[in-house]
Image (spheres, rainbow over the protein chains, first blue to last red):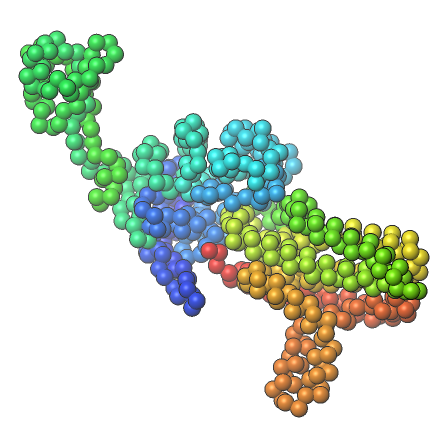
Length: 305
Length: 261
């Protein structure tokens, strides 16, 4: 049974794929236990072949687990009705080449049960959201990679889902649309939507996620909030006004001091130099306006686990 | 919001197959080549002294029959197998639609494409036939109905085999199915004449497993203006309906069990 605020749950899921002439079984996912809370953003990270896409496919009910079960809104993810409130974005957009963009999204919305006026309005809204109104009558085969990716995102949003399953959603998007998509996801979350996504771009993971699941070799190696990660402070970035350049130069190499607007200097120090800089400040040789700790990169922390 | 409505969802799939296929150059070329063959029968008919009417009818029926086989191979092979190979199936099946609805949608979609192509071919054939003075009778229309019925059966068979074979194997099976289906009576005769028990059993088994397409063939009756009993026609419709249903049920069963890569 799922708790009320859990919308997606994996219960000890194993998945095998078959390969070779004799269709030999090979384990792809091993005893996956994870849950996604309502209104949260959970991200899957891990190297290629870790099982991220398979996990997304299981959540979308496209494949069924060999052992264990996957529940979406309290029902087996394989059941069609459990998928009515779910939107899926695949890493590569697999679209029918001879359909127009509008026809493609309309078809998918129709499969989600939308009809008539509601369907037309939903498609219009989705096209507008992803800036594709001008492309509505283009054949899918004529769209660029970025446009296809945006089309994929548009179809996922079109039927107003409660949960989004996104497999590398940023791939193929230019910086502007990456920024815009990040905003769209955060707005979706603010409205109570749930997001479960996989990404290689850890800065996106850091920006969007409430919870991170690290996968490796088909297993969940670690999961938790980013705050709970032990991220060492490597040093500090300081913006300061320098009053006595000679005194400061005696402690910090002048080549470290970089000009900053407003006649200030910006420089980085390691943790061992903190006391020296505080000493300079107490003597009035410089005035610190900003001091930002430089923590381990998320990549380094995650893959050290 | 109107969520979880399973009714008529297959229609979304069917409609888009039809739309997509109408823009597919390969199918347009296939239909145009069929039309050329039908028109070319006028030239061949002119070369056969006194046999214009028979040549136009025989060639027309042959083109209509063969184009059904080619269409079913192309549509079954591309519409189901391509869907799985190119993974377009992912976004469709991630929606609240059952695999049964999906496959029925595909079948109806293929039928819609076939019906469009068949209507064009038949219209042109009728124009050519009437223009060349062929004396059309009721049996001609029954023949046309049963040729399309054969297309329907081929579509169901194509969908069944597309659920678990590769495109090449699918094409080979379909060709084999079509020709053995039309030579089905020979299997029965060989079985009766064979002395080897194993061969006898094998041929009999083939005879019962593969639908007898020749039983739906009333082309010579139409050409020679012979009557076909109405109860025989009705019986054929019934048997055909059973075969189509059987292949669709088998297709759905296999497709439900199939793992999507």
